[in-house]
Length: 367
Image 1 (cartoon, rainbow, N blue to C red):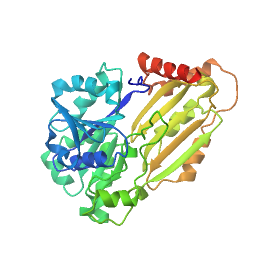
Image 2: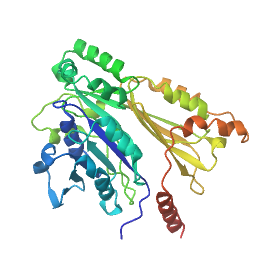
Image 3: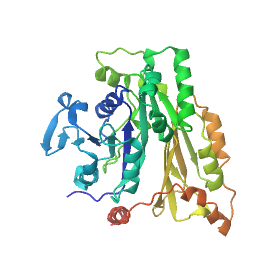
């Protein structure tokens, strides 16, 4: 029997012009998923290294890989249909990645996802991949790249090994000018930590199936490419825990002014008297920010627990900034509810059947 779905599936849009390395990045994610089940939607199978993976079966335009991932070749008119297929509980997927090439403009794909009536998906952000060595030439050929960068939530500045340090810094500054608050991540061969894009997969048995990549993993992945640095060593992780609720206004101000180099924030926030019934799951990638209210479980300790991932970040300054967001103790007031308005701008509600599934599991656990 397939267990009821207990959460929505994030859908990440992966965009970039020809030669940027987005396909390399996509294949990197598939090879280094470490237990996370990824659904991939592409315009054709030519971009996926299916031959290098075990194919468990194929039905129509959907290929099942032996590692639990699914790949669909679709056009834009079929997108909703295949999202429906990929979000069936039997697929057991953790995240869906849409490669924008050949399907639609990135902005149009984002609009389609936000307007989707599928209750089992939630938009997970737009990732734009750019070629550092060809960036200026690409802008000349495709001036619309400026529009893509302006709406991207995270930008991967790929192929940085092909430019010098001074040129890389110039390009980074230019991309920041065009993309505004989007996080800009340097990369070589499309290798980024998958955790920058989606959360680790937790199975019903409680075993965490995705983990930080080890040096041995990378040696297996790129046997023909020697590289000096451990992939995850390029990123820093900072945790924050507080048993004092967060002040919604201060917390939103902190998130709105998060420093350059802070790529990802995830975890849960307790807003105390602002909403005594729910904790708020937080997911931020670059400029993208989403809260999902989730009922507190009976007897659950009420904590704010956050993990921040980035490069060149000041861990103590981040923790101090979050500590300054803690609320003063006091009773629930109308102002406490008004203070939540800033949070509610970024809220995406869980669909009714998702909440019911969680209730069923909790009832079963109590029984």
